[in-house]
Amino acid sequence: MDRAVTISQVAALAGVSTGTASKALNGRGALRPETRLRVQQAAEQLGFVANAAARSLQTGRTYTVGMITTDSIGRFSIPLLIGAEDALGAGQMSIFLCDARDDPIREQYYLRTLLSRKVDGIIVTGRRTQARAPIGVGLPVPVVYAFISSADPADCSVVPDEADGSRRAIRHLLAVGRRRIALVTGPEHHHSASVRARAAEDTLAAEGLRPAVPTLYGEWSEAWGRQAAGILLSTGADVDAVFCGSDQIARGLAEALTKAGREIPRDVALVGFDNWDVMVEGCQPPLTSIDMDLEGIGRTAAEQLLAAINGTPAHGQHARPCRLVPRASTAV
Image 1 (cartoon, rainbow, N blue to C red):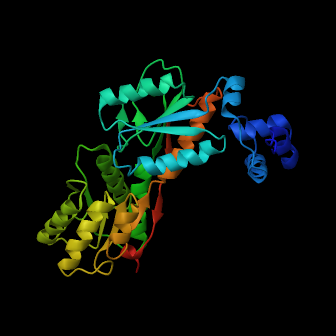
Image 2: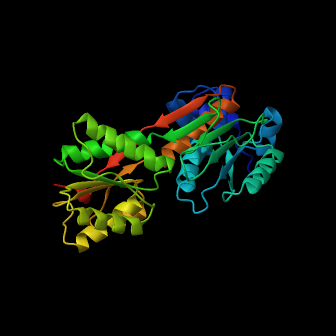
């Protein structure tokens, strides 16, 4: 029977010390990315499998992390989970995903369950970016908030810079020669809707412009997009572009404008927000959109959690920039 590959053999193949190999595989230490990658590749080549029980006895850690989400459909939590797994997988750590379904009682149940399983840390996420109350006080493990943020400034929160996304959208429309830009977004009381709209208005104002019509607030739905198109057409306003607060709104608006005889992008250029593949690819023509890099947020949150587990926690809100993904809806 073949003997199990040892970490010493992995270290020898990677050309590093056994201690460095251990840190690289456990997600610990301030190692250079290329060193960590070389060790991981050596471990894969040799078929090295870490003994989780032995690691736990040596370090007092379980090499597991909990993720609690309120995003039942997975629209935001799944990309975040993928990004977190990318970062945690380097240390061969596992994630327990718990869906609290917007139920505070269920959320606290999962929190207690994860703590009873001795997880090394917890990532809290959801489908809204606005601040929420901390999931607990004086918890025995570090907690990082991803996509959503904690109302406690001492907590670590990794969030998308939604205002940055709006600025990119407006600057793109201006760059393709549009000046009469309308804004259509979600509910006025919704954090993301207000942040995105305000940043768009400020970006226009910096260019001596204002929205072609007062900003239209409604719902996060295609139905609202179709209704908003009717409102824009009924005003008779000379609109040559629309920035929508979500891809769902933009897809509905595109459908209604096309049905009314407006050609996109020749008559009206269109930009959405979220870069949701189902929406941007289903839109006719394909939709230019703002991507919040959810996987990147998940990776960063996991990296911050690892740092906290290793004794170097970060505090406060960490905003990640968005990126614009151009498609046919703004092509000239």
